[in-house]
Image (cartoon, rainbow, N blue to C red; front, side):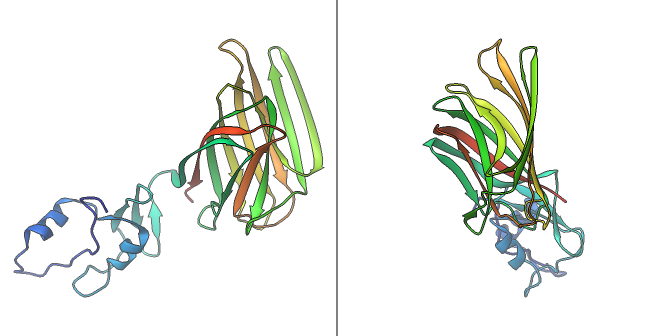
Length: 238
């Protein structure tokens, strides 16, 4: 735990003489906790404050400031960090399990990736460690210079993200809708494949998985190339 982290939120009484440690807790302002476990244990016990509407807390584990609305803890800000920035090097696939939960409806994955050879980039949803390889549909629009082309596919074994250029970093924002809801799950992305400083290709992709499976993970891969770079996963606060 950090220097300001605490394990309880004391409830001082009239006339009580405070120790230096207790004064330090007061001076930190918003109570700081290592994780939500320490936060939840810090209220309601003997000598502790009763958890009530308007209480604030900061979590070191997720770097989030939260407030209690009288029924549940809510996170301040539009995004919550789910998976901190994670690096990969020359891997055949990137698999992220346990990143989708009922706590969030929609998600954002920011990826900065390259491939060992220019290749199409795909994804598949996962549930309980099992990859789903059916029922994907894709709608794509690609722009290369003045040339614009589009296409649509259905009943595919994977969803389309775009393409990864060899020896060129591709910064890819991926918006994922309703993976943990019992309805169709969607992935949308729009990004530039930077071939050179004056030559690049734009990819716009909307992909859908047409079952009502509640997915908790996702995997990304190229058709024949290895992948290097990093990714971060966020949840959109409700």
